[in-house]
Image (tube, rainbow, N blue to C red; front, side, top):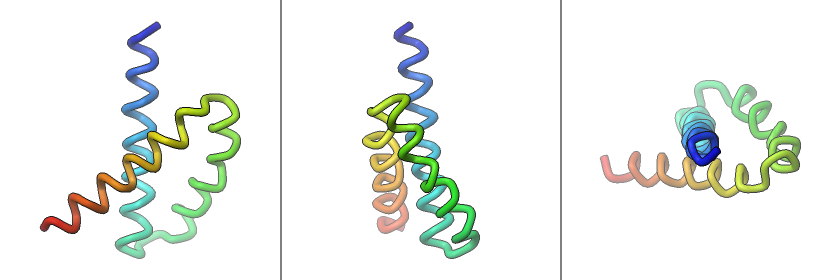
Length: 67
């Protein structure tokens, strides 16, 4: 069961980073908005999703800012 939690966490972080990339690079704004529009449903299923997606987005933005 712990492996499933780690997998969900990694997937959520990646999803957040992916959507942040779309927003920052202005490549697919509509797709990013659609992805995050489904966030409330995902949070109801697994509340930690919000934290990990935001964490992934912030990590991506910070790493991009260091370049």
